[in-house]
Image 1 (cartoon, rainbow, N blue to C red):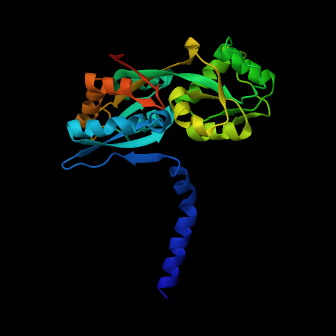
Image 2: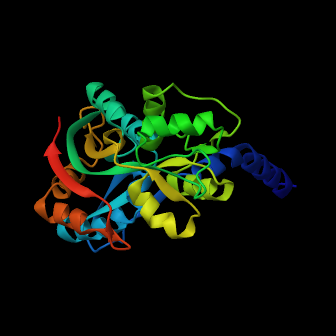
Image 3: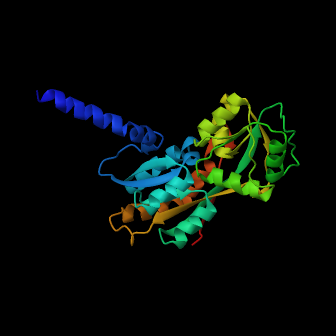
Length: 285
């Protein structure tokens, strides 16, 4: 008599919350290996810093040096900064300059530091239906893609890459709307995979491209435009807003990642013999 109503309530709860559980499954949460007497801090960061392998390479050394273990919440820059606004993380590592400035101006973040940079590239089918050339600017290349009605896969996820794409459209003829423009709300890895499967163009950071390229039937078509510059910053969440943050851990990570040791590690990091990021430590705010 008692068991049946209880099971019915459990079933109802699962049905009501399934959508939330599925949504949360798209947020990667990764914790570096625990060490004796380690303390944990939370960092929201972009898919590019994780999928490229950079943080998996860097963070064990940070843990060894400081005793702090880092829990990574991997998502787009927009969502990462929103986690900072809500006090859900101690520190953010992102690549969305305008959104970062707004985050700092609203006093959600403090102590912004440039860490490194790489660049964005336009990639697409090897038969190149939009007829892109090495002489094209990024904005010009996007205009050619739109005019040719070629397939274009947009991340559409409020990430730093998505924001860069939108700024490049605005620098050309504005955001285009045609049947083959697909906004998928996914990270860089799935976006590259879909671009390869559908033989479409997309904008990607070079680090994720190098990590995925062997599995993709795509080629680089536009690169080297100064508009494709891609800067990464680390920003501590403001402890005045959220005094329960791991303030010491966040400061330790911020100080460590701009140290000579970490900057040398970033410069040495390669995938398939190619350097992915250039260390660029300096305080920007």
